[in-house]
Image (cartoon, rainbow, N blue to C red; front, side, top):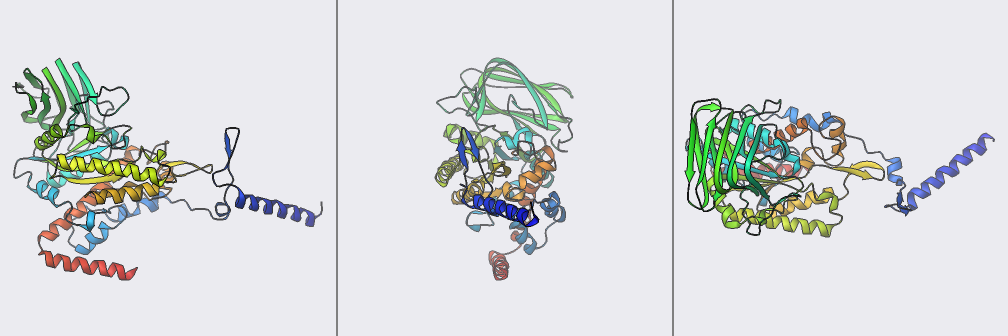
Length: 482
């Protein structure tokens, strides 16, 4: 074949392929159970450049928030930065004030202000929570791993525990749990029915990911709902002298407490009676505690399954300062259109309202899902509806008075998960972070909170008019630059 003939042949082939790119259905053609797809003309000629990990992490390296913030302008710009950004209801910068006020006074008032971090499997093993705990406790004091379930289905990186004896798990979620019509679950949305005697052992993990403050404790408290008959608990300090016994014969929600003379890293509890055990609080000193409450497979709809009166009383005893609700990832694959997204968000809004009704003085923060990858046109890419889910979750949270922080945006947005996986910061399922990736997310969230805290401290030194004048000028300057 002559050269001209060859060129004509290739030109015809290219033309045919271009026509196919244009006319081939976007969703492909189903043939015998297999879907045939063809790339669009845009994908053929425009290749989306993959982000490097250096690009995604550069802001964290440049803006370490460990120093004292002495500039409203710097706090302002960090508040709207991608990794440290909060979307605040009505743009109210005082959204976290109640929590900061409690946390600042906790040590002087000899109290432990708790942060309850609810979430799906993305926070399992105490990931993300452990870094947030460490950073907040450095700032406000406190220590220990926080509230632990009587039985931990998935071991954490901070603490190990085991339990034997006459107990039965009761839960609002999971495949093989016994559920209750009366909603008696407690603040972890699961509890353990004690009918006789049981023994719980707990001890600090020696892994590389344990925070410096999480491995020791000086107090243990058992939160329970007692049924008729006495509940007695003996606490054995494995690394110190003596046993500590306590009991209660009253029915209803209560708490047994022990303070240990010396800081320890392991203990054992012997429980006897008939009660529902809600959790074991393992803390050190006064300040802030961060409780990791991981619920695998959930979408955030479990709160209304808990009895409101019991939940309210348990929250009161726990002294809650902030409640973090981190959900959305498990629903993303099933949200195919805006109608299903709106329905999901509506139900989540009802959950936020329910939690606020049970704990009206707590600040509520909603954390949205990460980027997640699936096969789109034969290539790994962000789930098509995920950006819309993130946007609607943000609108929903703010509409119900909750602040919003976006993991999706913090990690780099669309198609960033592929880069995180390639660099070992996320797993091969293209959904969950690795330990080092989760640590980065915990740092980003901590950076965001501590930036708002620096702004809170600055605001306290100014009159409202002085602050509002400076703040409005910053906003005006930003708008003029757009």
